[in-house]
Image (cartoon, rainbow, N blue to C red; front, side, top):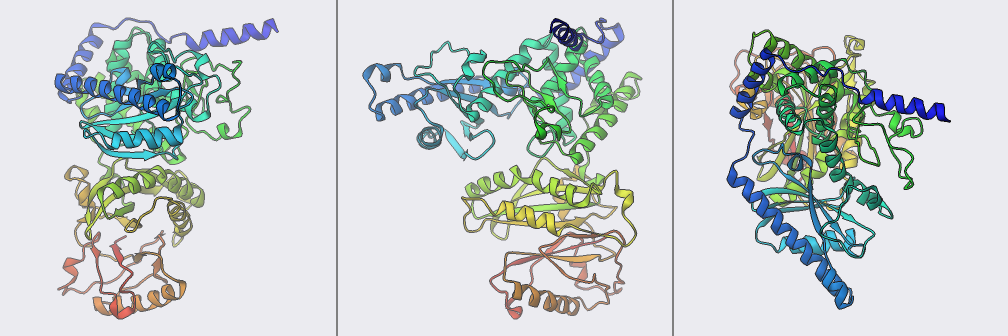
Length: 596
């Protein structure tokens, strides 16, 4: 037993030992000054006015939650003493608590309340209504069915994410320390997850050797990740906590290094990291008397499937990157390797630090895309509907990976396009498609049929319990011409590429309709489309309804030299057809033309 304990202590000591304690050289200090200047020019720091406004908003929010608990205690009919002692408290965590937030960043907040203030009725009903009546609060959205239930809103223009933890206490003292493990006793699972955000942030601050160096390095890595399109937990990349943990580990390994050294070491270490070996700031604590489940692939089958485990340091230790998929892991590793080459060039004085933060030209990187078009009748409906779809886009990626056995690699772009389509508010998500590492297995003429994963995804989306009239989703496969505009021209260029020289197939994306109508529509539409074009085009063997199909071989068609109408039909155009003669006047559909 003693021998076993000694082995664990040695392992823990080895885990915490740095790789190098060398002080920075004069050349590294000079490089760090160049990096600092580059970061200043990037506009990462908020103004004094915005900083003061954030403090005012947090103070106002704290007063609201205190009043909320007082009203609950009165409504429950509790004694005057309980009403007098009624209290709730606001804590901050995430980027704001770490001191790495920038202009326009949201504030991650946690409301801690007493045992009689429930989440379902009091937090998501009473407090929700109080915020709704507050003039300074806008864009209020309740996400009660999330893994970590949350209220999202803007307070005087500052974005707030508000979590709730219901403690096993009748009185919440003003000097409450929720970093203590005992605070988790007799607390429900959702409250444990909510508390974990604050507790993890506090542990990161405690475990890094130099908080100022850590903050500067994390700002650099966050900016790089956002520029490269890999900063999004919900899309299957890494969120703020995971990036902070990765940076904190590098700071532990090089405790005396300056930020310029740490940025370079960051990419050097993680390009060589043998995933799924976990990244940990300290050893996982297992023997707690609370008995809460911790990340342990030896005991938990689900943990064995995690591809890029980054373990939170606060009990109960969890994997902060469980959303990472095979596709998104490959994308991140590719970007790590690219960044490492840039860092080597910076060290060789070939380029400046600004080269590391150049925006990734997403539209130049892929020829095939999935466009997920989300529509609703109003801004509030769109916000709720878009949030539901976005939170489940990862499922579409996983279904495509599983269905194609890794042949297709998916790269979701972590930002959506907002606009108006057909008098509806819309948001569009884009997923880049290309052959994965097994892509060589595609044979000439082989088809990759994505109907099943897309149908399964749409079935999942249609389970939305608060769905309203006008809420719709369209999934379209599009292919970009090689001479398409670069991403610098804006993602809107995806819909306005030059006219195609080839027609590969026509994908019909429509709302739900009965099976007999589908069969009738497919045959009639093909004949009508051929007549409307007046051209001799080789079509695929079938017109696809609510389906995406990519041919491994090119389906070609000879286009006539005189093209009066075709000049209007660009490869990414969306054309509305009059459906009255086909019996579908009440079923609007979108025709997506794209080239191989």
